[in-house]
Image 1: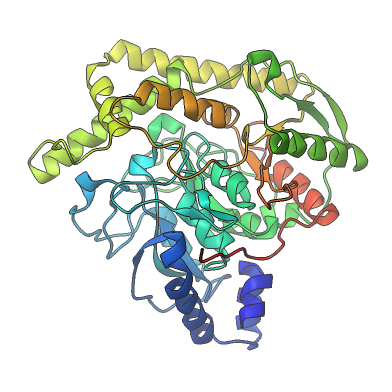
Image 2: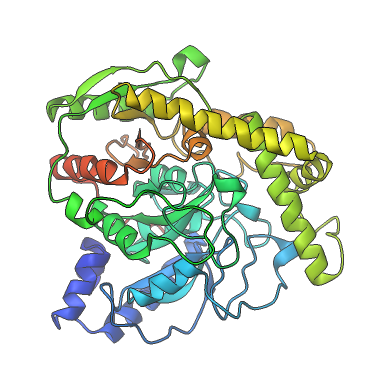
Length: 469
């Protein structure tokens, strides 16, 4: 059983169950034993639930966890990693995507750790404590889907739910050596509790060991739900079918950020160089990028995120009947909520217009003949735990630290484009930085095709890493 859990992905595990090689009960028992054994050191899973019988879907019997942020999961409390929400009412329904996970046959075993309100590139909430990176437990697992990535990289799960409002699927994937796809805006529903999150900057999907799992789960969860304000373009065929064929020769524009003052460590530089060399070896054309926009984390996203947090605080205050106390919120959430409450309608409307303009400019850039943009996912390896945590006195400086660590990811959130982090490079310590590809809006199939081609040329998954130290 250990070898099966260590060396296969979710699709392979479901196939083994279907073939009678192992039972659903055996897989669940082994998974819960791993969580009992490994989670105390990782702090990846914050809530464990009594699993319900699996539906007869494609991934029947595969254990799975939902990120503790935004999405309702029947019978649990969505704390959003915040003390202010710790005593919120128990969810009496599933979010649409959670319903689709259950219909796919996944067995929900709990919720995974998230920083407060998903606002950090590291997962170290005051409510639950820091989540460790299985590659080096003294380092960050990334954020905000750090719990999901830690659970998968440590071998507790084969795949886990994640979300991405500024890099939060791709950052932990890079930090923990996993594959992560941020879908296009509108690909996966946020219903029924919201039409969108962070004004369309946030999307949801999974972190995974393999490209195949990501493709299959995108097939199983994408598509319009009642009340959704928009939906991403319908692909030609399934995402799973797309990865069976290699992509055509691609024109890939490389951006290392040096002209904008971005500094890369040796591992990030290596991730870029390895990706360039491998893509050229596979027949793709590489050229220097001349992007019409640089970063997406500046003015528009700051306004949108602050406004969203302020609105979230207002909803919670109406629910619980009191404003947050001094100890209810960490410094970053408090700062953003305060700012958001002072922003005007015209400022918010302008931020939306600016974001949409960024998307159009990138659309024109791709229409000029550029198939993909390539960057490192992060500017350096995951830092030691504590380094990216803000105090009340350094929120502004914290923002600069976040930007220096993750200068590449947020652009795709501003524009709504799909993007992937692919684990092609690690250093002698086993630490990783992913290779980051951004595609035109709606072109997840192209990203998955390239990722599958890279995976075949250089197998991505080397087995789970776990250290109890």
